[in-house]
Length: 91
Image (cartoon, rainbow, N blue to C red; front, side, top):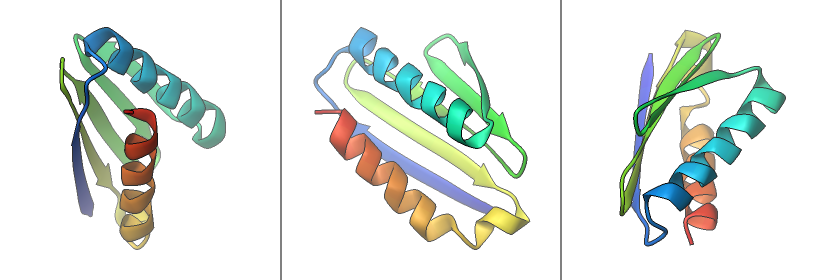
């Protein structure tokens, strides 16, 4: 099992950052059959072989992802994609 942690600061404010996280979750749901729900300012998501959460605050976004055995081999490319997406969307 692999764990991925990525954090980024932002200047969008909590509401805009939550909207960006919601857009990402909708895309993941469509493309990868991910289910998600909000628990306060934390977006929790899950699919077969992976689960995690995105915590949103006024100036920071934190992504935690646990990968099952089969997806663990892809942890490097998955982490790079998370970093790239956050860097693009949190501008």
